[in-house]
Each structure stands twice: as structure tokens, then as C-alpha cells.
Amino acid sequence: MNTVRGARIAVAAAVVAVGTLGPRAARACGVSSADGVYACSLQEHDEETRPRWLAGASAIYTSTAILFSGDLRANQTRGAVVASLAYQPTRRWTLQAAAGGVFGGRLSTPTGDHDFSPGATAAVGTAWRAVEGSRPFVVLTSTLSGSFASTRLDGVGPSTGYQAFDLRLGGLVGVTIAQVLRPYAVARVFGGPVFWRYRGAAVTGGDAHHYQLGAGLTVVIAGRVSLFAEGIPLGERSLAGGAALTF
Image (cartoon, rainbow, N blue to C red; front, top):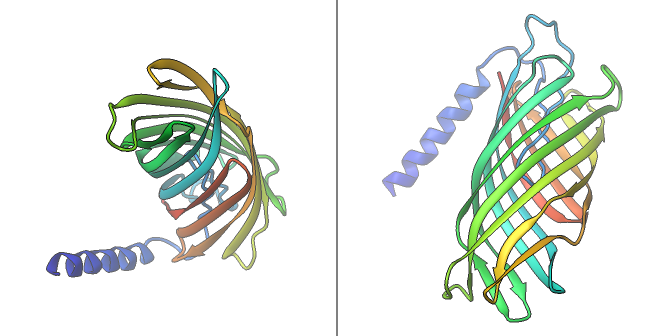
């Protein structure tokens, strides 16, 4: 009980401390993606005073189908928690890196469910603000990611390695409302190999859907802090949410 109470006090103190940082102008924009990396389009600022760094954390859940060699189709669900850091050398370009853990999920095949063990994921990417000072804002993104885990048949079988790699290109279009709300639409296309072993044989696969179509919302609070959520109902389905801080 004392541990839980202490954690709550620490979180509250962190929120208060963040709220005291810097000017009150709205400066944060977080956009999550299924691979854990989010793009950010900062508002216009003088080059000398604008914030250049963005740190964030996000939780992501995905659901899709993987098509493997040998006519094998597996339904996949996965969850991940990712921390990311982005640097904006100019007002239009953002460079990003992210790393985190993969937790839970499974591959459902004709022979049973293969549960994922905890694993790791990492990504690097870029974002480009296509039209400076535009309304609506337009951001183009690219992300290269990889994830590494293992599976067990029904959670008790022998461990089997699972590696997935992904190159993702996307774009988002949104508007800023009262310097606080930023709803946006997002579209992504992607592709990359998946390596696994099924019934003792090596198989290679890829996502049955090579696209995502959805929408999201960023809410700016405490000046440089933003909360964001995104839902993807079409293509590779996903839900994501998290927080970001610019400095």
C-alpha cells in the first residue's frame, strides 16, 4: 500500500513539475504509429527560441494476419510499450529513435495458438512537414523498425524465435483548434519480412495488409506536454496512446 501511495505522489509531483516548464504557448504534437514511433510537427517559432527535442512514451496494440510460405495464414495480436526521443534540426524536419518491449499476444494457426514471450523492439525514422505554416498541417513520415521475440505453442511448447522487420511510409493531415486540439487523419503503407519456424520448418512471411487508414487526436496540456491517441480500423488494425514532452 505504501508503495502504491508513493508512486501516486511521484506521478503527481512530476505532472506539477512539467507544468512549470517554459512558456505556456502550445508546442507539442504527438502522433503515434503501430511500430511505436510518432512524428511531431511543432508550431512556428523563432529559430532561436523554439524547442528542438521531444521525448515520449506510448502503448500500442496491433491485430493483423500474417501470410507465411507454405500457404500458412496466422492471425497475430501483439502489444508493446515504447519510449522515443526526437530531434528537430529545422522547423520542418524531425529525426526520431525509439526502443521498448513487446508484451503479450499470440499467433493463431491451424495447429493451435503460439503465445509470444516478452521481447524487444526498436525503430528509427524521419518526419517532414510538407507545407510550412499551412492549415491544415501536412506531415510525411518514414520509419524502419525491427522486433524480436519468441513463441511457445499453447504457452508450454519449446521456444521458437520470431523476428519481424518493417519499412513504413506515411502521411497525416490535421488541423489545430484553439491551440489545444489537433485531430488528424493518417494513412501508411509498409512492408517487411517475418522470420519464424512452424512445425520445425523455417518459414518466411509478411503482413496480409500492407496499409493503415485511421485517425487520431492530440491534446496539448501544460504548454509543452501533449497526450495523444490513435485508432486504425482499416488494414493493419491498431490502437495506440501515450504522452510527449517538448523541450
